[in-house]
Amino acid sequence: MTVRRFNSFAWENVPVLSYKEGGPYKDVTRQVLFEGEDSLPAQWRYFEVAPGGHSTLERHQHIHYVMILRGRGACLVGDAITDIAEHDLVEIRPMQWHQFRAAADAPLGFLCVVATERDRPQLPNTDDLAALRQNAKVADFIRA
Ligand code: MN
Image (cartoon, rainbow, N blue to C red):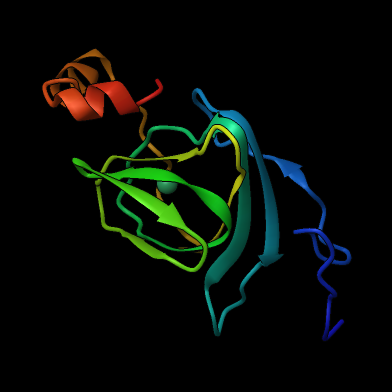
């Protein structure tokens, strides 16, 4: 199908899936908009974090290109915590810790492009968490 119509942050014939990338997360859904193919080996996904929810705190070698499509919240990328809202762009470089949180009173929906062939996300171990928590603002932000 050439055109899949948009309706309430879902698209025709695109199933709304559980997030299930592993690790602790809260109230996140996933939709795969385009699966990619040999000539464009990338997946284009839409994630939505419900108000008060968060994605998994993780890192990996592959990169993410993100555009916020709905609502607002904040993200940790590396050691920077930034408020984000509709149409902001977020780039996540290799091995940067990252986590998205929706505002308490708004969802956070975002488009995310990722390579089809990619390494598995790493979750923080005890030492990683201790290092992250050296920064008081990061300690306050992360959910792990
Ligand atoms: Mn990631």
